[in-house]
Length: 477
Image 1 (cartoon, one colour):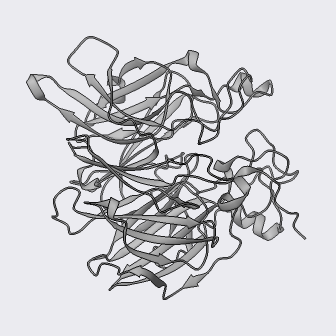
Image 2 (tube, one colour):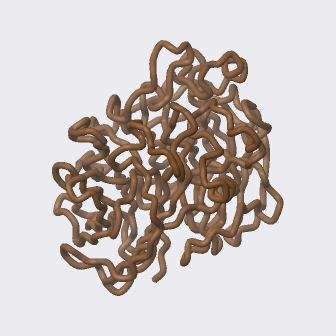
Image 3 (cartoon, helix red, strand yellow):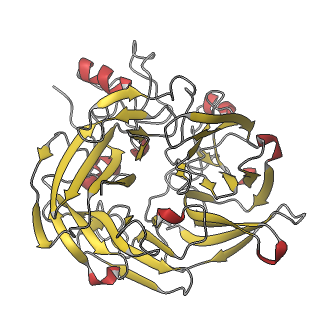
């Protein structure tokens, strides 16, 4: 019999895993009506540990991934969830117990050291006819977009077997998928790989370069002309690890380094800019401008003063809570025609948050509308999380918001255009809401042009969806 899950904050309330896989073919639309022009699937991914931790350590980032899918069509909705059947999942399911640790720095169970680790729990994207479940240290895992059955690790026809970021970028005009992998030459290495895959899923470019130091590189940005590789001081120091120190730690002395290269150039041409120590899990968007005859890259980032959820390198400060500091949306501008290796920063709004999204038809291009999740009531109750959805008009600075109410908490928002050629921001904002009183989750659809009016539809799910990381929409019109 499996032991109970311990009293770890990331294993309690709506961070706790759900143990059942289920199908619900006809969901109840409890409020409003689903728009009839909304047709597709919202996929969500997040940690859902199969078994309790091996020891006292447990990190939110290391639970096995579970995909949640809400299919919408003709004003109706259905739900399905499945664990991602990685090699790690299969080995543990066969053994009936945890074999791979969920704490950084912990070893596997004796005899299980050879199990390929892949939690596939961070993001899920649809590209070239494949649903890809992603973490940032492994190959993507291919799944069937309808059944959620797992096909297995996808290595682009054997042409790339290294790690892949959970945040690939998609060119809305070419259909290309750009991605990178950190520690690409092995654990603790500063090497980063860079890949481009065409709209048909064929690998067309792969390169390798050395970053200033080894770190947790969670995300990056691609404009229509440039690629931006941000290296923040959440360092991975092999010597520190060998001495029993943390695997990933905040080390501000390493500084921030931002590498920029033209998309059609060699990695040897990467130009490095330096900035104050900070951390960004997620950028919102970036674009290249040529105003006044100068080439500039503009990047909108959700910036923290230190890396959340990880300790200091010297051990003097424990990991911070998500509610201790919210990221601030800032705009960094890089002058590629100048001689300076620094960049400017402008704060875009005073309301912090996380999970920035936008109308991704404008990915890599100038844009106006952004969306994110915020905490207006941090630490309202044990297990609370993001409680407000925010829309910001980056042209006027005007902000609007929607709060689902006390005891209800949100996931990342996802924007869906009303139609293919709709103007920017004309569409729907989708999210999931956890209701702590009912201990269940809802799927909500808001009018993105005025989210303050609340949901156009609230659909009751048959289970709660644990707080996870990222999701995306697969349009099926």
